[in-house]
Length: 237
Ligand code: ATP
Image 1 (cartoon, rainbow, N blue to C red):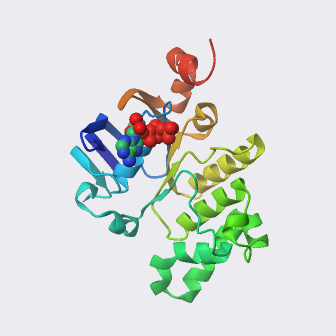
Image 2 (tube, rainbow, N blue to C red):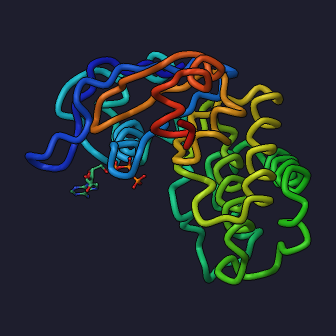
């Protein structure tokens, strides 16, 4: 579904990603782990077209996405749930969700209503709060809204940037259970996380990014058993 080869990307003269190669197959949860500043957000932003690549290849469903402008990438089925959620604070929960469904609007009211209903089923708290202003939601609720809004476009690939940031452990558990449910329903997820233990607990495969390079990759259970990964990212001696 997504294949990245020798990607070099960054900001001006600063090269953050140095020859990154990775892929995501349909139906997988793939996680990118790494410390602060490793380049995880830069990787997602480059795929989303928000940061321009210097060189390399990025193919999403046979489209060369490095040549496509950021505003057209969600229309191909690749959406990003940004870190910090970025919901529209002055709009209600339902208005935020409907904005996410903008692209499917032309398929008719029925499709839109069914999608809205599906988000309320996935995130029952959003139904209870559908008329509440998004800015007044708790952090966990805003994360759910950001995910629901992204899912309203029926994406093939959902990229999530650190969904666990700043959330209490119980809420993190709930968010991660929802990600597993999304995968079980046939969705594909690229999950960027600093919370390596939780991310590897639900992922099929993972990559460890260190100063812009992939240093380890493999099935999640192999990464969990890897001594270097344990020492650096799982807090085990
Ligand atoms: P975190 O977990 O802290 O979000 P990250 O792995 O997502 O970290 P990035 O946000 O991709 O890391 O940042 C990688 C490097 O790129 C950092 O050194 C950062 O300072 C730099 N960087 C990020 N955004 C910009 C920008 N807009 N302009 C210049 N440098 C940037």
